[in-house]
Length: 377
Ligand SMILES: *Cc1c(COP(=O)(O)O)cnc(C)c1O
Image (cartoon, rainbow, N blue to C red; front, side, top):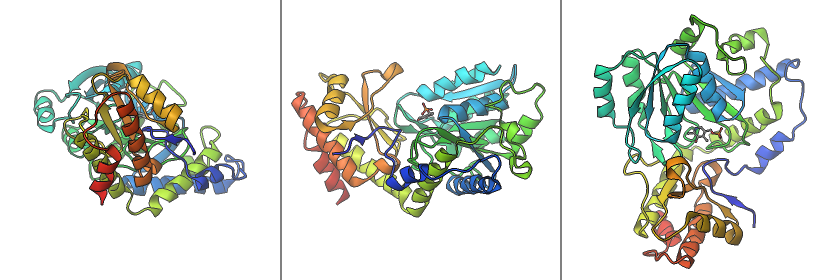
């Protein structure tokens, strides 16, 4: 049996995507057709993100998107608000400070989505920020934050928003223009199920204006988003495009767009998964705002995460993810994003987890896979 990678990225890659990666290439700088191909792929991303604003694809993992947004918007002494309720949200601070930002935190609770009333009250007193950062789906915790409410609130105070939506685009609703998101960034390897290696981001008019009107130059070349100004008109890329990765990504995007039901599928299987886990006596880390792309489950008392992982891997050929930082050894995670989000795959995974937990001496109250299937029937 093929290995089942049930992690929250990278996800399974379909055969037609792998084939697209093997297509003959052209010279992406000199062959003008490629400029249109790249532009067309960006336009498909615009439709997924519901935006008319410019979208770019960059050659680097999701982290590059996050760093490029910070590098391009933040300059020495700028006041930056990091809205955090988890590892990625907290980690934004490092990137903001690297580019001279003066960081203030808004701390949420780590097992809850960002509370909008608390944030509203905080902003009433403190709103002198140029930029705010927030994570849409906090992947390690399995929490999807209400950016639909957060970003318009930031806009009301004239604060530019950078949203890390790496693990949500393609698995959760995102309406960049309607929700006033200035920069939303994603990654190829998560819900869109392309090979790892690319990031993409939308850049609003306000964000473009802020970048073009900086007092100091951007301290980077690779992470400088303004070097892309007029790339299409000038038929000029700042560096050789990873053309094979983009071919694959474009095909994966087509697969996503062909599936009109993708977001409902994520919602439904995520719900069924959470139902099965809870019914059988396991506890989820989040108390609300559960992610539809990843479930984060507390490792039950008496069970060692490493034993769970190792047995699933060696005896069932399934890879799940664990925790790091404050979640080290405390949780296990099932990714149900993109090509992983199908009933069969989740059934097989839950059945294997069921077997392993029972073997390790944890008595589940029922069968995970059966509860899952019952919920869906
Ligand atoms: C996966 C992910 C990233 C990108 O991490 P990489 O190591 O570059 O894959 C960034 N933010 C979030 C929330 C993620 O889930």
